[in-house]
Length: 565
Ligand code: ADP
Ligand code: TZD
Ligand code: MG
Image (tube, rainbow, N blue to C red; front, side, top):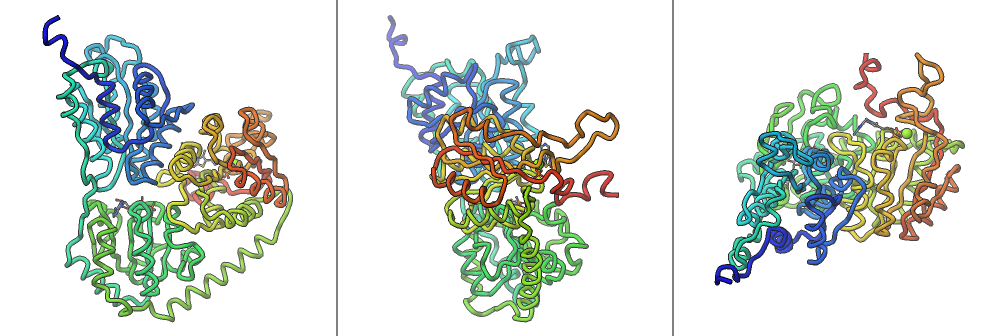
């Protein structure tokens, strides 16, 4: 053997795993197959945890929620073409929500793919990913693995976080290069989301405007939750007695039962506010685009936002404060001398009166403890139990289940609520719940509409296989929105929103060795939920909900074509 042949080499498989290790990628979520199975095994051998799912979309959702919860990209790994496309749903969803995530897919032979000669699972994956991802990269040369992975990590985390696609052609993985130069080619990413301070001028303008406010309101979004600003936010809000509205995933940055929360007077505060301070929240459909009738045309708006092109996207922003919100809050606290501004008492009183009125209305609604249960009865029971488990993370999806639960379930801690998010995506349930359980070491409750659960339900097997402390609550009203739809044209066939009201989702959980419960009354639900969370074992409660309960399209009735007219 010549001296050259004896030289120690390293292959693509090992370089990919080493590059992930040195960059604190501690878990991979995915589904195995050609050409990534051995890559997954090698990752396991090197101490990276691998979570094998039943569907790549769920694995991708897990990676996305891991990214959001840890401020570090979650990694999903899939096979070519169909596996890649399944993962893409989650990657696009991550980008839309601003969660850092990397989808790594193996891809087929480039020469054959590019001439469309029909390779196994042939697809031009990088170009397919481009329109839906924050960025898409392909690593063609083994010596570029280090730089490719560093680039994916930095891109996913910088500015507004998002989903990055990384294409690994099958030929890359077994390719070799000299061992020492291979190791030297790896890059440990430093400071991928550097502090971005806004201009002092912008901060001053924001404070000056806020000081003129007679009816201020602070709207907190999941950008603030991601940025972990709860400590400074609390100091700021409490010192200035500012009423606040949390968006759904910002619930818990300050506890929902905080006296300054205006969540139960939402329409009033948005309609009457003269100065609105948006912190890490977009004026998208979830905030009625900042437009009348929900919003006052005359309200002045201050927006704390990392992405400058978000400013003026839906209406004029009077004071853009572009920077990362953690750095911005530090500057605001420094400039906004303690105790120099208080929201006017008259405004706080108006809010308090409305809150009281609405609380009384809700209380009378909750008195109705009918059987079969409606959404209010069941979800207030879920709330009662969850208050005794403040560390439990809540994941939620559905329509009525999601909307009513958002109002009824109080969250006490930051980043303890994950939900369908910006797209209103069904299917996030099991993936988000699994990653929350894996990364947070706390119990997880997945609160699911029966339709919503169906999108990722097979991953209960994953929950059981990894013995995760996840309790799934299926709000079974036998349908999408309601269970009493009829087929108006072909009697005998089910209606378009009908599902099986008699389905026993709890038995499905038992099939995999988890605990199944069937709750027909609020008392049963209370006992079972307590038991399930306390057990720390995979559990599923099938909750019988009146098939006539619920509103078609939940809170979005006006968006359904015929109902909107
Ligand atoms: P919500 O749905 O809770 O209203 P959105 O996802 O619509 O929240 O908005 C979150 C906003 O926060 C996005 O515009 C995003 O760019 C911004 N954001 C994300 N991270 C940061 C950060 N570190 N600092 C400031 N803004 C951020
Ligand atoms: N597909 C995807 C991926 N996302 C969606 N949002 C939908 C379809 C449409 N859709 C909703 O917007 S909510 C919903 C669907 C199918 C399910 C609502 O039924 P549910 O909840 O049983 O989950 P409730 O409690 O019965 O309202
Ligand atoms: Mg339903």
